[in-house]
Every structure is written in structure tokens, then in C-alpha cells.
Amino acid sequence: MRAQQETALSIIIYDLEFTAWDGSLKRKWSGKNEHREIVEIGAVRIDMDTGSASEKHFSTLVKPTINHQISSYFTDLTGITQTHLDNHGVHLETALNAFFKFSDGASHFYAYGEDNDVIRENCELTGLENPFVGKQMIDARSHIQAAYSLDHAITSADLPSVLGNAAAELGLKAHSALDDARAVASALVPLLLRGGKDIG
Image 1 (cartoon, helix red, strand yellow):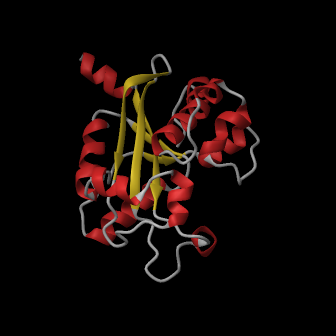
Image 2 (tube, one colour):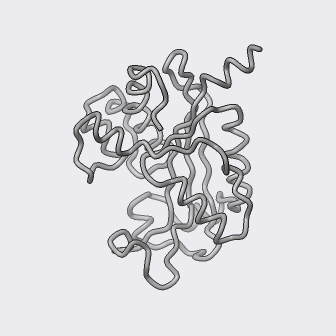
Image 3 (cartoon, rainbow, N blue to C red):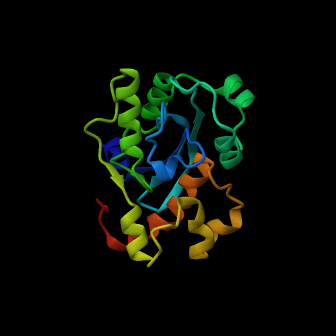
């Protein structure tokens, strides 16, 4: 019974960093061999009974399957180097299974953008079974932007400084999947608590 209560009150807020090239966003990854391959997954678990983050968090690097070499543009954006990725990255299947295990029992998954579509694309691209099919995977971006009257161009990394909340003092690194997940949490959790129900 206790485990069931914990399950109902636990959510996951996650973020992905994926392969990119100069201009790929504007092109919508339509260039030759451009795919939104996951390179980093970061997530925090939130106890919705208290609105606080669990001490446990999830962070892993993922080796792209198609484009093994990340671009200098991506490295400049995220700080992830090819050497670090080669030495510490894992295969996509390993990463997704570990993320799924970390999130066991969570009722909802929230991202600031179409991250669930990126997971689906990666599974289709590599022929993997998507472990998150059937899960409540929610894009909270429009809800956050509407609630705080934010411009559409505001990214997850911008949230702490734009909103002036406590997360701005934590020194979160932009385009770090885990830190971006923490930034989204700082904006989303108050909305969920105030609304008394899940956004979705």
C-alpha cells in the first residue's frame, strides 16, 4: 500500500540533448544524414506530496548510432567532447533501459519540448522497442510559457534566470540535460502544485 502511494505521487521531469549541426534547427534536421540522435539524458524525480526533488537523479551519455562523430557545433553548445563521449557514453538501448528503471513507478513524465518524439524517433531509427510506449509523456512547454507569459523562443535553460526563481542561484549549466531538467522542474512543479492536478 505504501509503495502504491509513493507511485501515485511521483513524477519524472527529463531533458534530452541530441545531435545538432550549425543550422540544423532551422532546417528541422532535414539535411543529409541529420538525425536527432540522443547524446545525453538527464532527469529528476519529484515527490508531488512535498513538491521537492528526490536526492536521486539520472544522467547518462549516449553514443549516437548513425553519426558517431558529434559536431563541433554540438560540442560548443553542450560542452560534451568526442573524447568524453567515447570514453563514457553507452549504447542507446542501455541508456533507455537505465532511464526506464530509474523512473519505475512514476505516474507522469514531463519535458520542455518534443522529447518524447525524439525518443520514439531514436527507437525507430535503431530498431529498438520503445520502453515508454503507453506512459504519460507530456510536453509541458506551452503550459509553462502560457502560465508565465514567456516568449516562444525561451528555452529550458533560460527558465531560472527569466523567472528569477531559486534555481537561478544553483549555477545550472545551459544545455546540460540534467541541469535543464532541474530548470524545468523549478518552473513546472509550482504550477502542478498550484493547479492541484497534472498538466497534460
